[in-house]
Image (tube, rainbow, N blue to C red; front, side, top):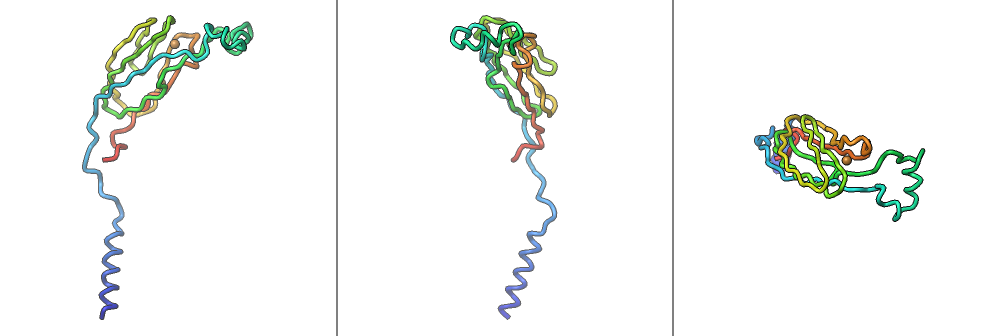
Length: 154
Ligand SMILES: [Cu+2]
C-alpha cells in the first residue's frame, strides 16, 4: 500500500515538471532614462613623441600612423535597452576637435568643451559610434548596443 502511494506521488511530480514551456514573462521592460558620460581620450598622439620615441617612426612618412592619431571614446561600448532615453554628457578635454556620431545624431565636440545631448534608442541593434575627423578614423570608434526590451529579465 505504501509503495503504490509513493509511485502515485512520483508520477504526479513528474507530470508537474513536464510543462513544455516556461511561463511567459508577465512584466514588460519599462524604458529608463540613463545618464552616460563619454570622454574623448588620447592614446597615441603626436604630443607623446618625446615620451615614446618609437612614435616618431610611426607618425613619419610611410609609418603605420602617418596622417593619423589614435584617440578613443571612454567608455567605447555603451549598452542600453530599446526605448531608453540617454542623457549623454560628452567631454572633450583636449585641444583637438572631435565628434560623436550615432545613427541620426552628429555632435561636434569642440576642444575643451562639455556637450550635453539627449538621444532615444529607438531600435534594437548594434551600431557604430564614430568620430568623423578623418585622421582619427578608423581608431576612434566604439559600439552602441541597444538590447531588445524582450531580452530583459524580470
Ligand atoms: Cu576624434
